[in-house]
Image (cartoon, rainbow, N blue to C red; front, side, top):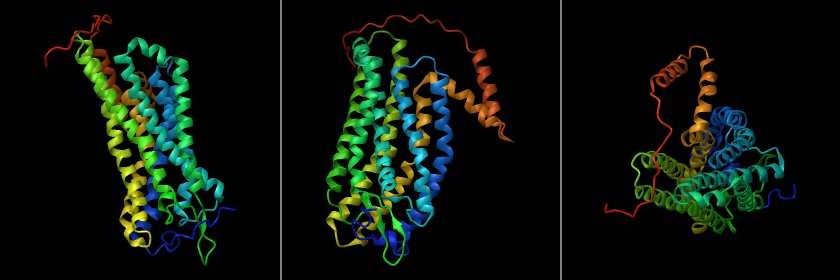
Length: 361
């Protein structure tokens, strides 16, 4: 317990009646969101892992990236009960400094793992369309596995400083200890420079990579002379690009803006805690919203992977059809079978698509 009370105990975490709005979020909204995420996300991700390991016979590069994304979700969900217990127990951390450091670091690590693997999927689609032959060399089985290892290691290295900045503090006049996130500590130290570095390396560069890969791929498909296949590829590519950009717009952009704003307010107004409240409240609410990523990622896998979607649909419908009074799943299943029966056979032979010079738009 050598790192206990490295900094003076934070008033916002010790005096729970000081900042009403922030405490309502910390004591009620956060555990409610985390519990909902655990109840919904863990079955979905465990089912996804089962589909990956037992139902998918042929793994593509995107399948490997989606599997690692699901694995990261599952590991984070297994650690989530620690935070749920902490917030439900009136911000009383009973698990020691080691687990405080591990849980705070793992949340940071998981968040950037999600960004990296979404980026890998976008880059994979770009290489498959713009450099199809070179992609077989650049992203073979060995290179794909190595890239996944690099993503895990890079996110871990990027998150190590969180462990060093995580402390547990003993509130004066009581035995209650708190495990605050480094963003909400009054003494900023190097937290601002670290947060900005993570925002640039772990967020801005991947976002620019996704935009570049998507625009180049769409431009390449427009220049091809074949009229049937490119439309299908463009539709699939736009699906990947739109899903990745929606992820960034809904989850990653607000999170980084609110996190940096909370630290900046502490740097600009170091002796005025009242000036931090709005930024702290926005960041706390954003942490609640971002916890939904682990529930959305299985849907992202269904949205991106056609083979995964087919294998995921059957067990998912079967799981919900067993619930008493639930008839929606069986109706969906029947309609799906009727649609498959009525669908005419399509030829598997597609005309070759050669590249042509760009024509006038």
